[in-house]
Image 1 (cartoon, rainbow, N blue to C red):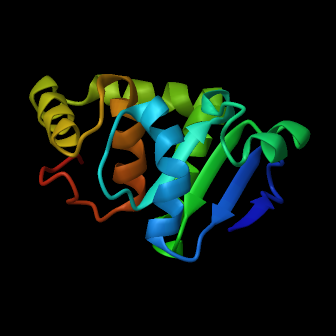
Image 2 (tube, rainbow, N blue to C red):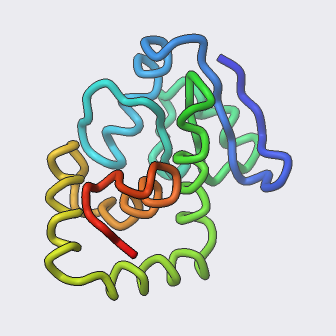
Length: 147
């Protein structure tokens, strides 16, 4: 496990793991506190407030005043996870995304919500997951036109 403080924003910690199994064995319990139980995660992202004293990364996070954690085992998911950090840390970006979400046709918004819930996400992270998938995946990720 390699822990690196983000050079552009020292509030963000990125942890790189050798394998998905290792990553999930350490990070799942924290992510489960934040977004609910999901199986076979490709990456992790959460606010530092979800870390407790018994978590392996607790001391490092506290000593370095980390506010947000990203964990990956390959670079494929890093953009998605970084978008979560931006959503959490940047109030203007979060407002922009909320406005965008509110302006989506209600039928499409309901479809996206159901789509994300089928993936296992709970209500409190729907908009955050929407923006991370929307801006890190192919334009047709949700299977509908959002233009």
